[in-house]
Image 1 (tube, rainbow, N blue to C red):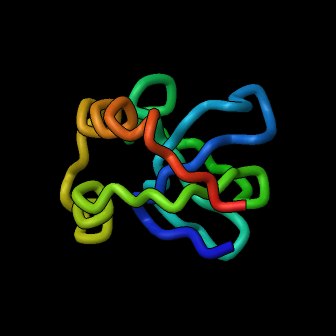
Image 2: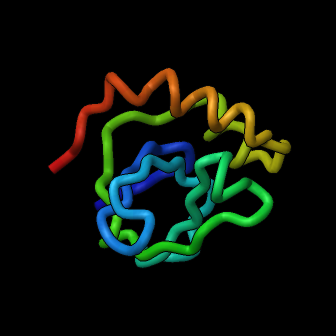
Image 3: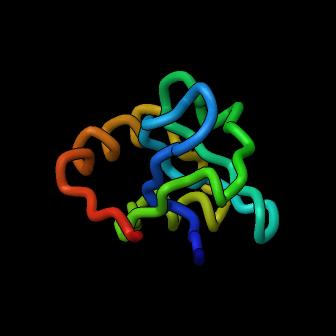
Length: 93
């Protein structure tokens, strides 16, 4: 399971089960930081095990580029990207 910054994921475990997020940070091969711009804001991302995420093939390039170069990403940008992509997601099984 390779995950990259800016990748769209679904949670499949925990109280956020079924919710959509974007990967905003990678800790190691087991953990990632995820944000949705609403309950889990960029300033306080959720630390989540990668095995508890459903990985999609969709990557938000603008957000990935900003996160990787330490440019500030706003919560509104994340919310907008998730709304636009929510209906066109391909789940990588």
